[in-house]
Length: 273
Image (tube, one colour):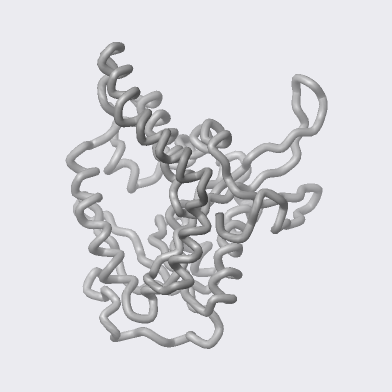
């Protein structure tokens, strides 16, 4: 996975607390799902896609596990932030994941292809094939035997509309000088650990990479998350309209030094505003 390895590469000190970043592994999935599901419980976007998640929380949590399993074994870069906490059962210190971010290097350049190839190493490709076989053949059989229905927390029609609209929006909005960029697919911080700079630390990992490559960073922000990105220097270039009337989210871009002020009026999806 892109240039971070399994060691600590980024740290940030806060009063009496230090956080570190490492690459996520399949073993992290249960913890990542357990913080993601509640962290997005009050998110307006998830009100559209998973309107019954409070009623069918286990279904909603299971969907998160499946998404994370697939994502971590893809060519995207999944990173976790963790810190030392006291284990109540042993009294010893242990690492606890407090947030995570998913990055995707977009574009068709040789560098973009190289980074994605790094992210999809031999072991990850093998694990992905095994997961695909499991989800294709084993999971449906288990669901049939146990009579487990699909995710009852989800709105299937809204998900289908989202899946149909989003790729086109990305292609139109992040075009031109933005075609080659690092994209934030998802950023989640454990509600118990929010407002400690963890989200900014995870985002700055990508800003540093983008600055070195001379490319932009793009994302679609939720209303609560937008102020943090604007503080980091992001600017709005468009709006993604969800299946719910009146609910839309800003598409934001961060430009590296040397590209400030470029791109306006260059077919960047401004019609989505």
